[in-house]
Image (cartoon, rainbow, N blue to C red; front, side):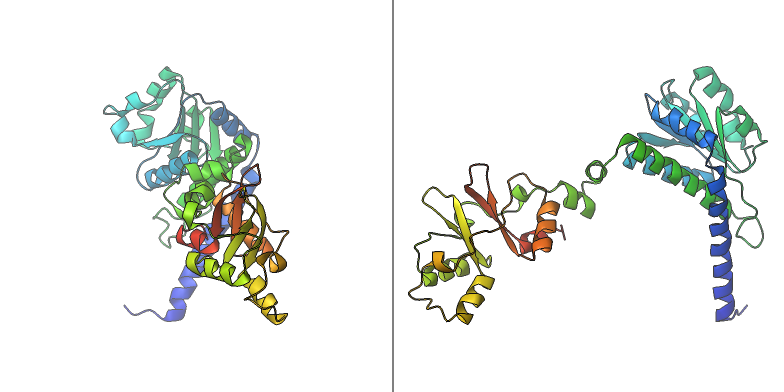
Length: 325
């Protein structure tokens, strides 16, 4: 059957409108029950155990993953597997979060007596506040929707979206309550770009030892230029005999010197260097170095220890190669 392009757009727009409405309706349900659910999860001494089957199971897996990556230890247990041994994964120290749109999912209802006997608090997210699961829970969160986005009213669409959104609301509320930071998040994602941005230190990428471009204040400007060229960082750091930083000479300083018609063969680098240069301390996050470079519109930073001595030189390209930018 052929379908017109405009009809496809119309159908897609209808789905998004219905799902947006489903989420909007949840705002009025952020009440004392939501707070009680958060309090149970915050006081949990073990893990948050999420249960769900079918499409609710897929949503449950995502909610568990989001909780775990935002400071609330959690994992997903398949209800059918729980009836065949995995129930042993749940302890009295845990909080159980059960998802079921109908609230009458057999595989979950089978576990209710076991959860009650164990004494683990139970939070349910259902589309039916009068359901068996809703009434058995210590806290019930209503995620009912007026209708599914599926034109047949059969495929879980709006209902799963609403459940997922409520799970996100719980996760973010808990994140804020715990004082969870971007650095904490990065520790859960060390292999990704965010982890590199928030965990990488400048010590891991800066140039040290013979790789550092260094010049003495009495060096001829032409020799400083040769040092810049050899080290390829677009700068040379001017230091005294004890390696204390006095300033920097950069590509920008070179252009300004040429504009002033400074003789590169006779001028000393101290005459044209930037004395009040920006520096950064060892152990600083690479992301902070990037922020500093962008703020001051510079491409290189001397790394200076507490004694004022040069310990490294960091270039914008080092951060690019490390994936920080």
